[in-house]
Every structure is written in structure tokens, then in C-alpha cells.
Image (tube, rainbow, N blue to C red; front, side, top):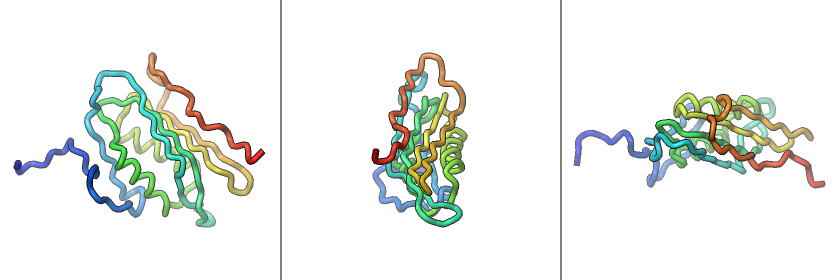
Length: 155
């Protein structure tokens, strides 16, 4: 066994890892892109995302869709799941939460391109959809529609 730790190995995968107390304390884990140099898109869907209203403290619910074209690294999915779960006790407006998640991933992972769609369920009768991306997708990237319909109620 080596005295040096392998920093490219996932930190959380296969380990019992508690949910972080806040997004600020959550650690996102990145590993080398196994297809570096290839243009492809990765999609994560979190249909049961929750955070808290910063005014009332009541829960807010969203369906998040994160699409990205990897650069040199990819985000390890368990660390992303733990990061997203850390918002359960976090107070923030829909816009701040959605854009903040996208910006953190873009800043830390440095993908070729990233977009996030936050499809928030109605509170007070108004659904809010929030979209953010790093820029235009790279030429030749297949970036399908996120597939989440606008909220139409029960009707």
C-alpha cells in the first residue's frame, strides 16, 4: 500500500456518507473524463429536489435537469446527489438556488458547456421555471430538449 493518497479516486463512492448540512459544506467530487477529447452530453435529472422558502421556511419542490458537455473532468454522481440533498435545509429563492447550482458546477468542473433547468412546482398558484447556461452549446453537440413540460395543473 502506498503512503500517498490517490486524489483521482472518488471520495464518496462505496462509502457510507451522511448528507451534508448545507450546500456550502457539501463537497463535489470530480474525476477524470474517461472520454476526454470527445464531444458528448451528460444529463442528470433530479425530479424530487427540495429546498426551503427564504421567507416562510416552507418546502419548495422542483424537477431539476442538469446537462453538460464534459471537459477534462466529470462530476461523480453520488457527490452530486449529496450536494443536491444538502438543499433540503437551505433557504433560497428559486432563481438563486437554480443558478447557484449551475454556477458552482461550471466554476469547479470547467465543462465545455453546462445548462440547468429548474422546473419549480407552484407556490401561491404560480410555478416558476428558471434556466441558466454557460453560453451557446459547442458546435456539433447534440443537446436534446430537457423534456419537462411547463406546469399545466391537473387540467
